[in-house]
Length: 166
Image 1 (cartoon, helix red, strand yellow):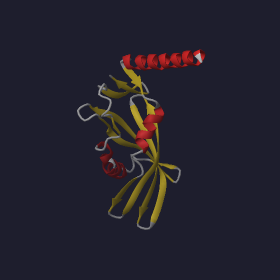
Image 2 (cartoon, helix red, strand yellow):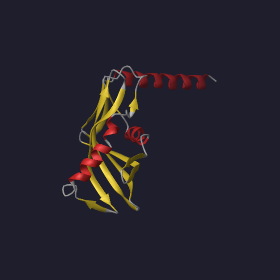
Image 3 (tube, helix red, strand yellow):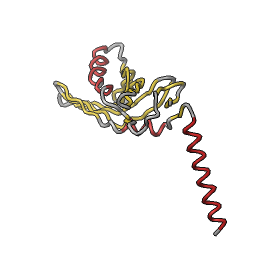
Image 4 (cartoon, helix red, strand yellow):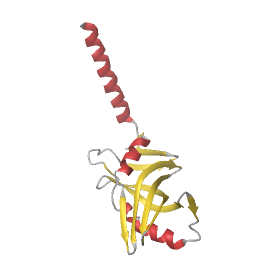
């Protein structure tokens, strides 16, 4: 019985020590799966327009340098035609410390494929402009609320890592 109590006491000390260690760190790296879950909660996204609708689904995230990359599948139903492919967006993040929410910032379309083939957006600037403006609303909705984490001062992407500063 005494060995069990000693073992439980050691586990308690370890958990307390690790919690104290994390609390005293000036910054914490957010695991990539948490970033993926936060972004995935915002999908699927459907946008209606004059001659049809477009749906974005199945987002995959990655972090490159100081940008969050979101790659999604899309389905575009327009005038009886159904086009499918992928879209890749690049964005920064912005933390609002007043309302404790994290937002996407400077959301841009960087790549589109149609039926597996790349579309040169430089040859089709209207497509880039229309899609960027259609999905600009993603910047207005928060991707993460941190009301119970009053210690958070800022959140940034730095050197390929999602970092919480406290």
